[in-house]
Picture: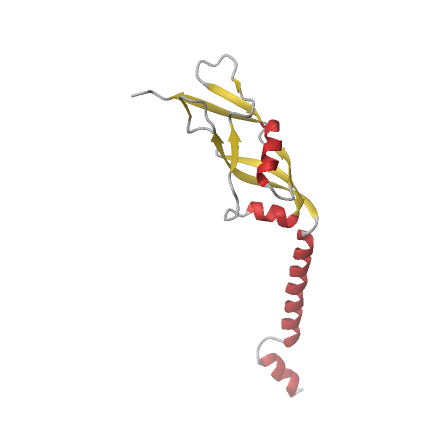
Length: 148
């Protein structure tokens, strides 16, 4: 009886430590296994506009982030979620279709986001694909550059 009393008196029971170790180990193995399976996830990505028409600049209220739904292996999606490995996506204004907002007196335009799925998939260069863009329409305004 004194041995059992000494066992509990000395601190944490060995069985609890062993159980906790194997619990953490099984969780880690389950997580690694789940990363290899196909999944879908929403991932916010930085965007930047390139090839702006001459004599114009994009106003500050243009979107700088866009939410994409990606489909692919979990490890590919995971690497796009971390900001350290995340690259910004380019929206090339010379190759995409953008239209003027009807009855707008200023230089307001819109882009139908579904037209960006293919260019974004090419830019990601991974084994995951872009399923959808969460925002269906992107709005941007141009400002004229005043020559000095």
